Image 1 (cartoon, rainbow, N blue to C red):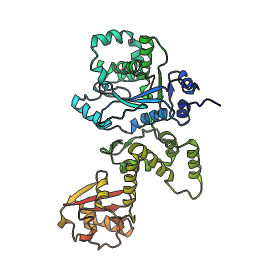
Image 2: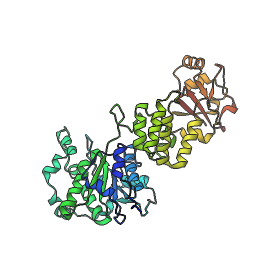
Image 3: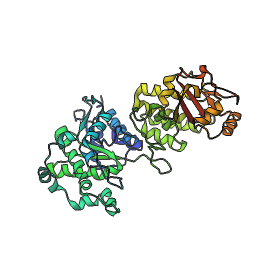
Image 4: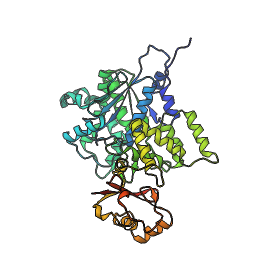
Length: 429
């Protein structure tokens, strides 16, 4: 009878385009060791609470942690309650604005919630819990004497900033030592032996593996980085015209999150299915073939990508909410609109408030202009002729259409649409 072995997570990440670098091939070997008595790896990824929600840039870290967990290893999400007070200079051209204690606590609560998850396979920790006890002289004695200034200055994030007009503060310069000490502390006290991060974190991660080797004089601490998420045109994926794509439903609705992935270009969708979902590569290859066949329904793969990523981030309930809103807000959809559905997307589309008498018996053409959906009455008339103006998802067939009391959804709200994408929510006060 063969010995059951864990799937090799490093090989899986490499196959899916989620591996940039590893500090040692011994990590790959450790992941493929067939000895069932060998303890699983314990892996961590850090997240500085610079806002009340994580964003799409953090999603890859969560996905890679999930792959380690799916392959039988244990994972740690480290909230940088201490390091966020300094600000990571990696990939930044300017020093981050200083965050006060109250803001950091608020941000941390927004990210982890009131009752952080803790079980045998996953735990959330906060590095402020140990940094608040560290004294400067003790830190310099224990860690500073092992840090070589030449090595620190050779890090890419430091070199770029030193060459810039603004330069780099001593505070920022020490960030790599703080992150390095986190790895040392977690290695000693929590049995963590792998740190993961984006490719821009390589310098900070190797600072940690070096400290462990020099101070503890042991091997067995590894680093792994994954590529930054880029579109096929080389631009960063994860920003919209309105700013960051947040993971918290309080900062970006599941509907808007879903729509962002639904609009991914065909050139990127297969690669993103590999990177951002847990679908098997075999299934993704089949989907890729389907995309190239005659009769392929446009955006089918985008729909699958949006469903998988929304489910991972927002759960089944969040996905159901996004699908309900997507269907209900599709111009011409037969789904009956209700106040809750329209109000649910009001934060994501332009909206305005009008008094009841400013709406009742007013023509749809006038309302389209007064709400700012369209620039002029002539534009509204032209759109009606083209069949592109919708009122509560029903196509406006006549220029003479006026708003009746029965048109106001639940007596509170209206939805105007110019084409498929431009919408205006009208609240009736």
